[in-house]
View 1 (tube, rainbow, N blue to C red):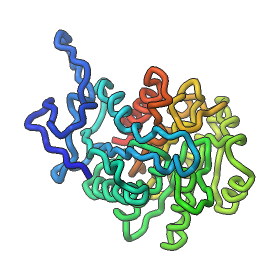
View 2: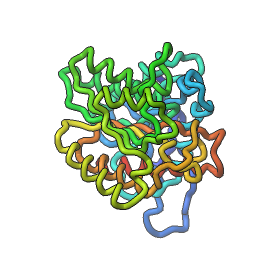
View 3: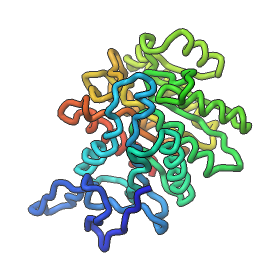
View 4: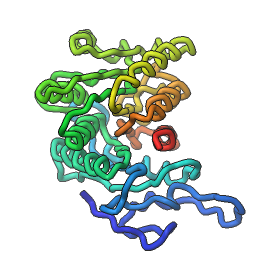
Length: 324
């Protein structure tokens, strides 16, 4: 993993910090006009608590899955969007850098992400991984498992148009939750997986049948359009959250309408409204049980006016602020 040096003083930009952590200055403002780029710190051995961003600039899984590549540039675009967010009620913010490069295989990149997530958890911080394709989920989960060798009753909540339970010769962006289930079965963990935003037009009958066989509970995108449908999903999710030790939240940006999130591998035709996704994020992040999160499928090459990056930044900020 790329090493990042610690800055000499508050507000200073460390040489090793990404150039993304530079942004607007408001020298004539009399109140607190700080933004994320003013307080971002490198994650190191002295870091304890707060939220830790971990970049996963990889979309090899998307390529293997036959999708539109470009998400490898996602972490950089998301950091740039986060840099200018106003500092409101965040905990300590730090950046662990990126965990892979062009020379890494997908499996090596996922393993490196797992190591970074585990390290953050051992230092009592909340890891928030920035993708990258949704193959990020297998890496994040590896870190959770490594940090809890004694076992953990874990609920996985995925906001996504796809189940990502595919069978394939090579692991890819469509296989991470099948891989997680296989690991859980092999290690005696319960596989408790919930997906909100599933599209009937983006999942085959084989995937719906597999989800049923695996005991996956899901909500269709069409059921989450109305206030009543969203309320039913929130009530069910709230009741379930209380039954688990911890929750891992993963957000695939293609759960949103293409008009809101055009910069993804597979733009959503219907999608779930952003305001409804934010309510679900608030519920999970504010449950007091969130131990890890990630954002997947940000593809800057397909974005428009950095709209998807800014949407992703809103979601990251909500996660961090409510999980403190």
